[in-house]
Image (cartoon, rainbow, N blue to C red; front, side):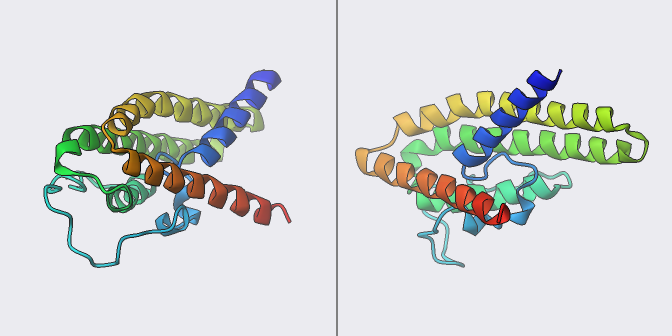
Length: 179
């Protein structure tokens, strides 16, 4: 059990530093703009051909979903998504939304059980959240791969820089919290 929990924690750590905050339920402590520098001017109009880029779901949204909506908007601008890429972008964005909704539900369920959880159940519950992160990443990667494959070489270079900056920001935040 301990080995599996350690592996799950390692996987969760890798997810935390490898994604730019896209699918993380506990990312509320890191504002969306801190994950990577924005090239988008606040209040700037949406780019042409992007009407579906951040249509919020009609249901109430939790912290992960709120963060993801902001991140979707930010990434859309940073990655210079074109109207020709809308189909791939919309699939990627919807996967992000679905993952965030699932994580909000799982976090809410876990929070409702805190009062009666034993220490072991608490660890098992956290392990389940880490496993959920992995499953969400497994859904997100193919959607992102399709989008990335549709990008121009310039867009790919920018995307690599945005994701690298996000990983560096997470590593720096983690280093600062350990001091």
